[in-house]
Length: 240
Image 1: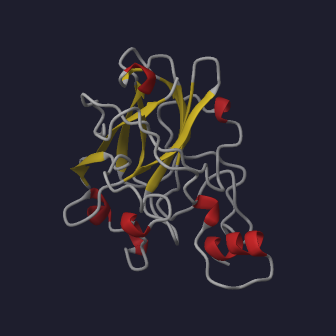
Image 2: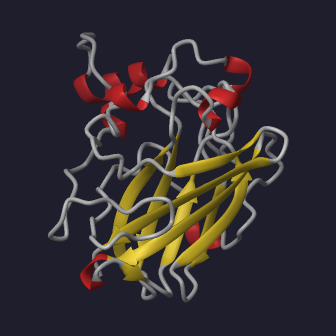
């Protein structure tokens, strides 16, 4: 059973009418810090926009404090992706937020998550492994860097990375998701869905999390190539 069908059954029981993947649905609208200009690509603008709140989805890291590490590949194969996330303080004009705790997680090249599986939601059983999950603390520039692989995709979702930001004391500040640029020449086009291709792929404009992001605040800057690897940069500003 595909993820969307499994999630549909959780939400509406025996009713079998078509619905979107509610477990991955947007949790709320974007919170603006007094402006409408975005901050992306790892550097802030003169204005400040709070990263939108999104769902953790059905596959959050079960014990994130156990995976304090910058290299989160954990043996998974795929094209290298260096992920650089700058956390800004939206209460301070999006200035860099040092000492914040940042968790990330995403699927592998085949669209599977670690720590889950063996069910209708994900048939491949990866419950006993913990790949593509990690935690880092922001430096003086608000930056965390992870070494990972380019995420694959699964039915109903565009390519994405989940992010959970906490303050130094462990208080949750923001749960959100990062989108990837799409179109000719982009990393998504180059990777071409790995072995799955892009037939049946859900693009950002149709994704139930990213489709309302008309300003592109959630879309990272991604550069690089298949041979050299890719680099992702984005700034996510959070209320403190």
